[in-house]
Image 1 (cartoon, rainbow, N blue to C red):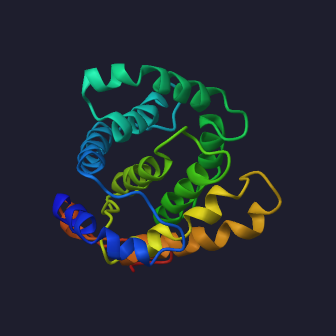
Image 2 (cartoon, rainbow, N blue to C red):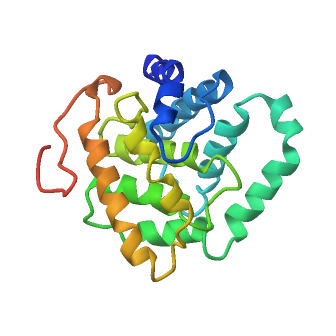
Length: 221
């Protein structure tokens, strides 16, 4: 996993040039915090933790804190004001806070893991976003949590999938998730992301590989 992210870091300038909107570089701190985030996702899945259940939403908030500040207490203290503002937004935002995400997730029964993971990503990034900052990275970890919970490989950024992964971001950020426009603008990116997750699933990131369903949930990919 670390090796794949390092490849993206080395090739980032070339990848960025292929995007319609440039992204911030993947520096060492961002990379290390993402690896810590993946480790926390592993812990949640191993513990059978349902982050969508009442009382467990704090673990999603912790994922965002990890991608922004890592696990260093001093750095967290340095950004205490930002973290407090994020927590208020997370719990109190009427249209885009955790309640919106939980309610959306509750209606995803029968949806394939690929579609559910992609849909959660879209739900976090569309307007208003779930967190003050770090939505993209946290949503990536949330996708991996959903996939790992179904015994599927996590999503790991690579030079091969980076452009297709980053490209929909502008559309998502500019689309109100509860608007009429969302009914037309969000399904396409969700389907394409679900397909991307399936096509780039790497069983080497699992302890034991197993077959997985296709993005439409009809059978092995």
